[in-house]
Image 1 (cartoon, rainbow, N blue to C red):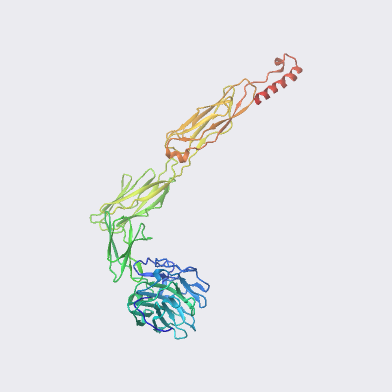
Image 2: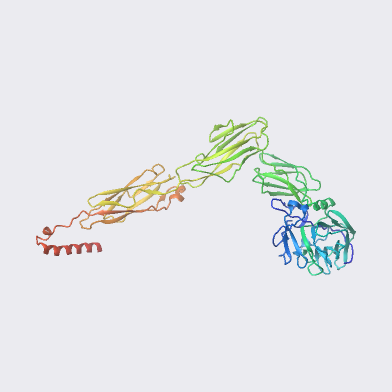
Length: 593
């Protein structure tokens, strides 16, 4: 592996991983080309830079380990472990990975054995073209070699570190190209450099970690938090990465809420740009609304009921600032339910900033008192139309508890959404209304007092049943009634109409028997109920098309079989023997008809 020097490029590989609960942010503004935290427990390795440089599937010899660099602390839960014979992670090439100017590469390494051959820890290129390579020399010397080749395949830069890589210990390595200077860093400190001029080569080879793929040896150990920047990081940035830092400290934020805008101001951080984020709920998740902001102020005029944070970005994005929140909040303001049972829910009106000079009057009102009412235990509350109000003293920051209680009604109206409005005098910011849903406890149905066992007679005997609804309709609901056999029984009235006034009154339906001259004994018939028809669209889902049960009845005969002597002229037994079969034959023919 000969030596030559090269022009201006910065390359650093840095490890960054995160445990459950640790937070990794967007990397807009950091200059990252690739950021592989290597936190996955299985293939593939994902790119956290936002550039989607996902790895190819892991080959045999690559596994996940939980033995990560102590310096990364809560920012790393896993790393990759390579077996020294086949283990290598490959990131397919793109134009963004063809680094021709300044760049930096950072990586954490843990070596188990000394190799008898060269090992490329990270790099891009093959024979004879190599864009860059971070190598460890063979044997016990354990120095780092940084290498680039020119377009002709000659060594453009080829120099060693002054420090070495120990066994069984996490070590941070960074290589930087900056103008004509090429420099190696071990654990954040400069460890050798070279000065070169001229262009470096690029090719279509992928970026790999753990081996060069087709030549030389394989890394036996673990790798973590790999970073590739398209710019030359400052010495201080490289030193910070080697301590496990992820970016600058969070700035201090103030938010001023006006009638139509929110003005954000935050503390300056040397060399940093900023990402501005907001969320509809306190604590996030946040959406970035501005990236790479170079100043320390931003005005949001698109909407005001938001919570804001700002993060600084240098070599990575640091933690969020404190949260800028509205001066008065009513939370939670979504996902609240009451019911007609009734049941209640609650939220708090909180002064996140001291009340203005002269104090503030807070009014809380229900937008639909037929569905829900509001109340509070806050001292000094007084009733107003549809709600209550309280007086808040100047410079105080109280929390006002609000209870919302569902109201019962008699209609099958399903879940009904309604709002609770909160207003605070002296506050220019409009407090978003609280959204509540009142769940129904009514089941729509038709109640029929009797559906069987009704008896009428051919002598005009009647029977009856009653009909009512179980819930109050908004409009009229009609049910038709017809007899299946009007020659035996009639029904009155022929239809029933329920209104929102008489819906629960038992309406009487009368059945009247019909006479005929035949001796037909007891005849069954049915009162057929028609599908319900509604006139108000609000009743459609509950009642329209509902089919009530039919009602069964019988009509009793009033004819009697004549005595044999009178029917057959006193012919005695002979007349009965002749007359009875004739009577039965007549009945049979009538039934058949």
